[in-house]
Image (tube, rainbow, N blue to C red):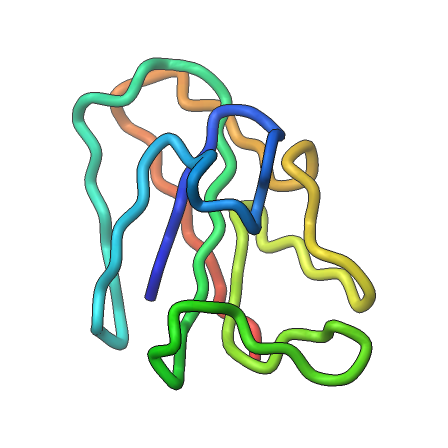
Length: 103
């Protein structure tokens, strides 16, 4: 799984270079804990790179071929979710975000 979090809409969810923070795990279940994030709005995207080629593989018409998910569990048939749709507020030390992976 490769989650990345962003605090603004530039590049979300595809451009990892614009992410506030990224991680790479090779597991079936992942949990991340961040103790040093500034209080603001974020959006998180995850990608299950099933064939380990470092990119999101697509089917015909750009539909995802591998598992993916974003905060707020937004799913669109024809486009990637936008930052505004996946945004959540981190305004206290205790914040839990659960993301379902869609295949």
